[in-house]
Length: 486
Image 1 (cartoon, rainbow, N blue to C red):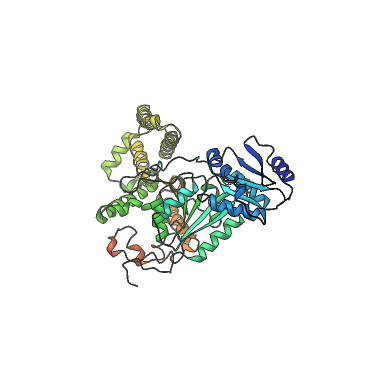
Image 2 (image 1 turned 90 degrees about the vertical axis):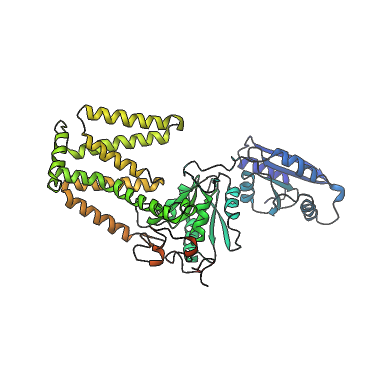
């Protein structure tokens, strides 16, 4: 930092390339020249004029002695509703300007005073748009970092809830917060994540999805190893179970790590409903997973290689349906699946007012037209419809993509080798999932390795008064919940 005010102002202007939203004003206070700077695009002009400008005109109240210290002390006593600090780090000053702070420089001093004057550029807290809510809290994360932290803090008031910040991205300088409960979470996992965050060296981080690949670098898998969610209650529930959350500035999606395979069969709303109903729902999700993954491949293998296992009457019916179809069974299924995936993408990318109607009309018209034209058989349409509808129970886009990848793999194996190929692919899938680990935790926990306590709340939802222990496979610390045995 240069003591000369004019030299500092010139350097800041040059380093910011005379940006049009940079405002600088110089004043004289008790024979001392000072200047305050702010970026109009991210700072509140009303806050600056109503509080700061009025506060720095108290020259008659300043006492003798070091002008900078007296000036800073008087600001502290006058402006009590804003973050007020001093710094000598020039690069940090540029960061504070871009973050919506006002900087005060005084001629003859190497320190600068920073005051938080951020403009409110965020949308209000609204209901989640990507995760349907039937029963439970309606609030969701926004693009405002402080608001997101507040949504978590208002739910977990435990002093052991730790929030640690890091700045990631050479150009964006994005604030990334690491959240965990110190007496519950595994601190070794926390340390691993902190080390990986410190090693990220990229131009910019614009969304939480940008740091996913840096946090999970080993054992590549199409199935997700962390949860991306808009819902604060999901984050809080995960923190209470010993997991770690990451909240990134300027994005409404928080990350929860580690995410295990069983987590994607659960929903936050499972704990807002009766245990018996939730158990049936979880069984339904498991059945839907098996249907969406296996049905197309099983149909191809049976119709192509292993038709003898079907009852004779059913086989005759299917044979008559396929008499007018000139293509092999695998071609029918792949064609219909591709059409459905295109319709799904159209539904996602187009405005909601027309997306649903487009997908419904497209599916009905194309399916009926394809059957009438003799391109596909009616049973193939039914098989793809069952597959597609079952896949709609899963909302996490990474889980959907993982299912899609393995479904195609099962179809390829079944096309060439029939039931034997299907069995080989199934063995490959189970082996892959069993081999996966997320930060030292088996991806198939609590199923493999078997954990009886964890199984109580996996497929079956047990009542809260009997759920007294946290999952031991996540952390061995303080595993007894409130009300449990100490």
